[in-house]
Image: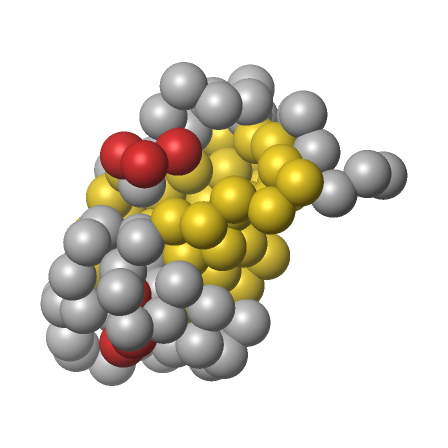
Length: 121
C-alpha cells in the first residue's frame, strides 16, 4: 500500500524484504505527484511530470529497468527520461506511462522494453 501526501510518499514494504505494519515515508523520492500500485510493484510520477520511479517485483520486466529483478528502493525509469509524463498506471503484470504528446509507453512483459503507441485523447 502506498499513498501520496504531496509532495511526500508513504509506502509499506519498501527499502528491504522485511514486513512493515504501517506505511513509512519513502525518503528516496522528493516531490511525488502521483502513485500507481500494481499487485506487487509501484510507480511514482514526480509533481513536474519529468521523473518516473518504480520499485517492487520486477517479474516480466514491468519495472522498466531492463531486467526482471526485484527492486527494494525506488529507481528512476531511465527509458522515460526526457518525456513529460501526464499519468502512470500499474496493473498486475504491466506498467503504462502516458506522455503529454499522447504516446502511451508500455513496459512490455518478457522483453523488458518500452513500446510506444500513439493515441488521441
